[in-house]
Image (cartoon, rainbow, N blue to C red; front, side, top):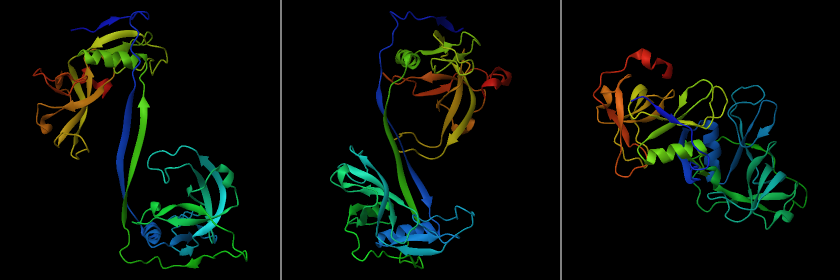
Length: 330
């Protein structure tokens, strides 16, 4: 069926203003080299380690390569657990999972014996209690596992009466049961509000239709629409219904199961050029063994119950599309 188009009436076709909370989250797992392993294991043992660079400066947190020469450095030293605030910013509304759940200051602290500053939280009653040059000390977490959170925060302390501070002293970096790897969760919580074009696109999906927008200049049809042509930079308002069938232009086989996703692996995720569209969208392919999915496969959407979008795409049984018909969308 050829694509149909219409220009919406701004008075009668105004989309509902939509918004939804979205979370992007994944665990970042990495192994540790000798320097980072010693640093994090040291925090578990209430020891702060830095590394001495080629120019003699002590860097805290330690790095594995000299920032000036790019040479590998492993000359570990122990520095003090007290230090001086070099700069700060007040945080009046802590976010979830930040070091403290009450207002606090983000501070850069140059620990005694170090030449660079460490970023962490300072527990203070208010911004009037914080100043550059104030003396602070580490407040250790009650339970330590070998992570930067082993420093619960910094807290104010009195200056040394004799004015002396701890010097950096050599350290072997050797500990019992060293930490060799970490998993750091990365998470972003935000509220997403689609614009006019995407609101109409989502409303059409709820009716089991797929709608894009045509550029008035180059005449390309974009799905999902963005409200403007990415090539010409002009606004797009001419709505075009595309599909529902389409062609697999390229694909990948997923072998790692995602958290909270009830799909058995392996499965196939593909770019699909819907009939009448000039941009491929991505979706899961089902109804066919994963090793039989191929470029040019003709597919159609499968809707589940009252779902607002296709659950997956399945083969139509039609002959494969000729490569020349979709090569510009690969």
